[in-house]
Each structure stands twice: as C-alpha cells, then as structure tokens.
Image (cartoon, rainbow, N blue to C red):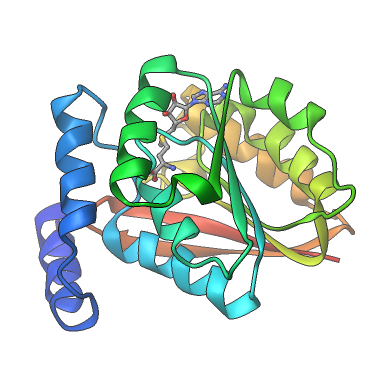
Length: 220
Ligand code: SAM
C-alpha cells in the first residue's frame, strides 16, 4: 500500500464525515502561497484533535508548533465559551501567516501566539491559576522530551498530552535508521518508560500524511 492509497482512503472517509470547509481550504492555500511547508496535520487528524478537545471539555489548550495555525484552528473551534489556545512558534514568518489565518477563521480572540523557542516559552508558563487541560506537541522532534516534561508540569491531573509524528513510517522502530527526528522520538519513548506521571500509548495513523502516529498520554 502506498501513500496515494492512504490519501485516497482519507479522502473517501472525509467525504462522508467532514463538511466542506471553505475557511480551512483558504487557510491551507494561503499558507502554501506564503511559502510555508505542507506539514500541517491532515484534515482527519485535525478533526480528531478537535473531537478530543470537545470530548474532555478542555478549556485551556496548549500547542507547541503553530506553523500556519491549521491545527490551531481545529483546536480553537472546539473550545467552549471563554476557552483559549496558547500556541508556541519560533519562526516569525510562520507566526505572521498564522495570524492572518486565525483572523480569517475568526478565532483570533481565542488564540495567543507566543513567538520564540518553545522551551523558553514553556518554562515561563505557569499551571497557576488554571492548568492546561490539553497539550498538542508538534514542533521540532528533537525537543520532544523537553516539551513533554514541561507539558506534564503544566497540565492538570487527567489532562491529555498528544505528541505528533512518533511512528515516522515505522523508522522509529528500525534499529539501523537514524536521524535527528527519529532520535528525538526515541528519547521521548525512553523517558516515558517507567514514567509514573502519565499513562500513554501510541496510536498509529495512515492517511494523506503517510504512515505515522500520535502518542496519547493522560496525566495522573
Ligand atoms: N501544528 C501545525 C499544524 O498541524 O498545522 C504544524 C506544526 S509544524 C509540523 C512545526 C512547527 O514548529 C514549524 O512551524 C516550526 O517553525 C516550529 N518549530 C520548530 N522548532 C521550534 C522551536 N524550537 N520552538 C517553537 N517552534 C518550533
């Protein structure tokens, strides 16, 4: 099975389960036109994040890695009245395009973009007075373990931490394969072995972004 087959399968399912969304289509087009890489989550993954936020009634959401704000919009649209997304981005141009996209999607009032290296921003955030309910980690993979450690500090008991791209076409599990992304995921997994603060599992995903997976963790 190839990426084309998985993309066709995603499109097939989406055609039944997703409403056509001109806003998100505009956002993806605008991001591409402004030179952003096409590495946002897929529509099916974005909607899954959206449904999870709704399922747990999350009010305070944290995202690491904004890009053009595509996943941010899915998250923001899931929030109840008074909810907010804090999203962290290192790249000034990405953050500027995200600002345009968030405005176009009419969610700017619910989203704060913090510009800078994610770890610098994370250490300045506080779980007081209200901890986060839901964290989505999707930035540079080398930082995964540090971001996860900070996320544990910032999330409430019972809160959720999701890390994207932890399967990487199965390469994470191929002993001979090595690159900085794969190493970043392996370091996270090694750190999670025996970690008593969370219960976690990996859910593999296939679709128009290929063969990958989310790590899903619940804070104890
Ligand atoms: N979550 C986005 C979505 O699905 O629409 C995609 C995020 S993209 C995969 C990763 C983003 O993380 C890029 O915009 C990149 O500039 C940003 N990034 C990379 N290193 C970072 C760092 N150290 N701190 C904050 N952001 C970083």
